[in-house]
Image 1 (cartoon, helix red, strand yellow):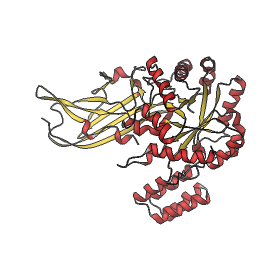
Image 2 (cartoon, one colour):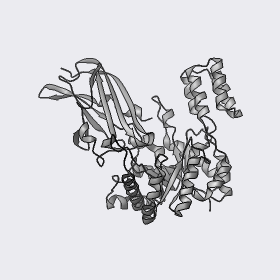
Image 3 (cartoon, one colour):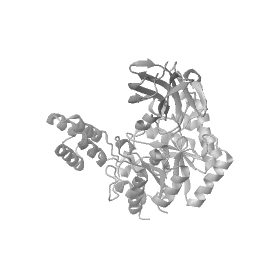
Image 4 (cartoon, helix red, strand yellow):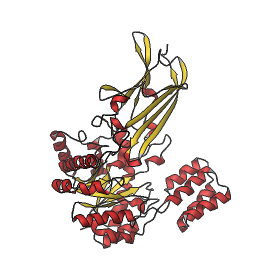
Length: 326
Length: 132
């Protein structure tokens, strides 16, 4: 069994927002342009019918699309709005009810995993296990930048997973934890915003050499670099790179991955995040779940320039396919 | 970058009834990457040439119905969906007067994922052809 490929529709947010595609159009583009099989949605972003209770007709139509385009529901992202009301946090019981609402919706739409965001308290996840087992849907905790794979916070969750003995809990690492350098597009933006090209090239060289972020920032300050250069240096010092070998330690808890990416170049190479290293490890440990692309480069397109999200995701899958070897 | 789409210049217009300007309204879309319950729309402030209209003066219409911000504070099941246009009414006698005027809009959404309110601003130097 090989690693499988999917797309989080978060990747297509501007195209959907600006009505270039509707939900069916996104499913179709995923199948026919990107040539991926897995589908991940944020139920509150690109809802099937209406959130949280679609009509049966909406659900039937959803499954018809899956059949027609040869796609599969993989993961649904859940949001627990514990700040739903001003002046108080929702109680544990209210938060478990929200989780149950999402588990139920996921099960109706054929998703076997929901993605749980990191601010959701461990107690909420633990108290939701009976509901997850009832609906047959797993809760996957995101491990997202700037979190490290061996952080005590992750260990605490794993302890809870073991204690519960449940198969309905696990981890969804995000490839953003393997970021080596700022995306090329950010460097180009900086030059457009007035950064000196020579300084940006020097910075780029320090990134390639893997100089510590703090040192790069200090050197730039000493040189009297302007705000446009400093912004890039600061972005570099915020990058976190986990040793991919650490994936082995949590292998049995991994449900799926978020394939975070910011900028695919013309040769279908991600310009900031390491994919080769982690995928090599995943092949060795026999991971056969999904990597779902999550394009998040929209925020690098601040001017009038439009972002072609579908093309970025397509390039991402050319890369994934080559690295996975399927 | 959805912030730049929150309010579009062409979606700002005067509201005129029986020849009298009652105020102006604009359509806005959520600058966050998902739809939210109306209770999470925490604050909205509109400045017209520096004169402030706080949320107690504004109404917010979504899904064909119009609400005050006091009403919205308890609405957990009614939603403002991702990409959906809401219409904000600003009571300004006579509407935006003829000529160029600066309109500043600041929306705050309470985002649990970020531990609190996030404010997005939009500024327009708007020409009104229908004022008065």
